[in-house]
Amino acid sequence: MSDELKGFAEQTFEKIQQKMSAVVLRNTENIPYTSIDGRFNDYRDNICKWTNGFWAGLLWLMYRETGESIYRGTAERAEQTLDHAFREFDGLHHDVGFMWHISAGLDYRLTGNPQSRVRALIAANLLAGRFNVEGNYIRAWNERNNEQNIGWAIIDSMMNLALLYWASEETGDPRFSYIAVRHANKTMKHHLRGDGSCRHIVVYDPKTGEELDNLGGQGYEKGSSWSRGQAWGLYGFTISYEHTKDMRYLDAARKIANYFICCVRCTDWLPLCDFRSPKEPVIYDSTAGAIAASGLLELSRNVPETEREMYESAAGEILKAMEKHFCDWDMERDGILQMGTERYHGEAGRHIPIIYGDYYFIEAITKLKGNIMQIW
Ligand code: GLY
Image 1 (cartoon, rainbow, N blue to C red):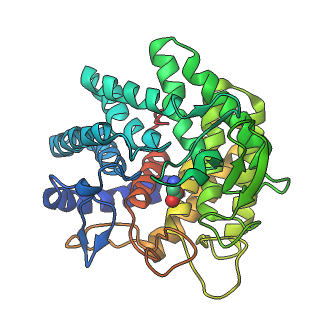
Image 2 (image 1 turned 45 degrees about the vertical axis):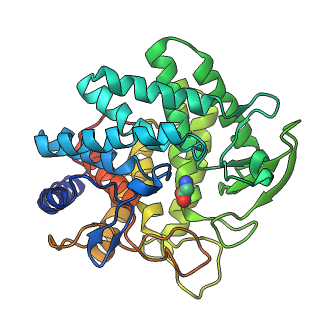
Image 3 (image 1 turned 180 degrees about the vertical axis):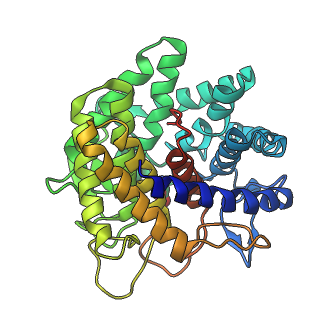
């Protein structure tokens, strides 16, 4: 790691720490998703929302870096609030990985809290229960009254596999990682394209697992490349490699990383929402940059020395560009990373702060600082 990058990480973390020390005091009970007019909103009434673990996860990252009890206490409350989602059950989906791996899961791994271990294991069992044994894929979504998506698998699920690998490592029961591996293999075959880009949604016949179609999902159109999906794939295959040491996953992660880097360089390291969309309108997605940067740093730890700098410096370029153009350091306003975009189509949810943008931005900066841990 270059001294210049380390210096950037130290300086940026100081700004994060300063801002978060004010933000956490204003948000002691709520579970935020976005910030509106500089104030975080509250998703406690939408408890099964897939993003509801990121606030606790972010606070655990801050606790790990600073040791300050305010972060720990607030993270613990958010984790307890999430218990309501288990009771609702019906609204839950494959993102129980995002929801519990970095809230309860990180709590357990940092503090040893036995209650948190139980929560993470319940979530892992829910995720395992979504596996289609004939089709070899994890069902993504669960919208009520929507029979159509029974056969849908999405690239994002690759991140959720971390919870399954952890559950096998924690319990010694290989069932969870068998499922993760089978889903990863199917994703590698059906989502990853020859040029290193990824499809967002693949539709399978839920009775046989045969591929029926693929969809553009949150990207521009069928055949395009939604940048956050590319980031999930690059980070997700890296995680599968870390837990299995199967070189095919590392190669998949490299391919997606090389494709991502190639695309993001063209727009001065600020990621567009879809790398294959019309030139106008210009729609960015900062969350894709934050996820990819953290994924690239994870990948850099797993490749031979000769490749390491390439991925580290690309992550650094993305983070520096986003720090310069997309970060809001005003302590009176909640939300650090601006310009996140939920999906390509539709004005709502475009160019807004999104909690997982902040989470992955902070995760990446702590990695650049050298504070390494197997988080996923
Ligand atoms: N996992 C859903 C998204 O990235 O928007």
